[in-house]
Image 1 (cartoon, rainbow, N blue to C red):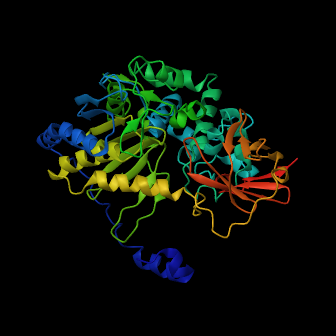
Image 2: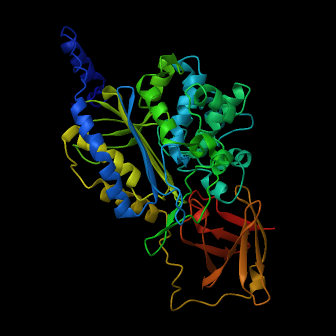
Image 3: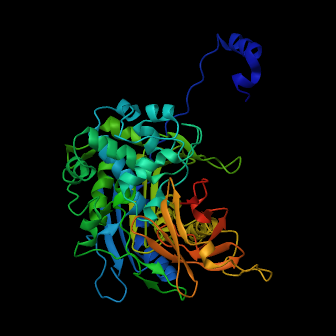
Length: 511
């Protein structure tokens, strides 16, 4: 059907005149619950076998799962090991880092701190926080930042965190990031989300950690849930993070401290605690007969705020982002809420809910993302609705994570210099101190054999440079957002670091 804009003013007038006396069309009927208790029970009965099969296929060391239906925890269990090489088992009370599953938990905290749903749309300023456009700075709301529609670029600030900068530095330097159209573009930004959450805490005269505990964790009886890394790493029963080795085994090689982006990715919790949060969500903010979060402020988090995934074809469905939630609607018109969490350094989680069916699942794992957490949830709901799995969800989810991993890598294979590579200049031509308004100071030094090292960050991380061609070198990136081997190019008193330059902020000037 053509829109009024497409018809033009004259055509719109004719259409409006012709339909003025016609009855208004009726909205489609509201969807009704369709899942029987028997169907859910069968899906639950199959769940352990599904998890164990996917663990066997992937090698992920440990998994913990909770399922809630009709305000009851109908499944709660753990599988595998907390840490490879040890014998301690994962259980319902094992503490996991939940990565970006922190976002819907944090939006629940904010919903509990607000006095009404309209407060989501107010501008709450974090002292000193600004964006590149002063008008946007003055108008950006909590809802804008919680739904990733502020105009900040995708994952803005994450590379600063990788280099070791703290939350204060990162939030202050978001003002240098280029902006896409305000409220008209979606880009996932951990530190935009963090700025809004911290602003709410500041407005309440407290810290984010205390606001979370007082507003949600304590009232909901989430006794092993925290926003602080120290609580996770010091918990006696916690799951270490693991990455996959080239031979297919898994090792706990890294430790991920996400305190700088605590509201967006710093929560740690257990399957038991998350089952209580699921019950609260599915009951509209109440738990065990007690009102914990206002129904109206919580309901606002479940409403689409912006298109996050346009439909891929005429029959595909649109994906939306709400306030800390991925929001979609299935073929029956039912609201589906979900969110994944992923640390490339060793964690993957998923929550999925059908509020109309009062059904939800949370899956926590201690392995880098290979699709298991998402696939368990997708398979569970598929089986509950259809009595069978309609796809190899692990294969599909794993391929998607592989695709995302590859998309961040350089198109140049710096490990294989060209046969016609030009020699480098004497090392003295490259050594020195360079400065960048966003990434700070960089230094290039040479040892007694002329080998170059690049140092970046406040507590400098040191990267040995390998010659590639002429004035171009490379080094292996590290951290949560590592992108394999990246290029460093020297020219006219500058050095450009390729993987830092996606938003044209990666050129350093010699001092």
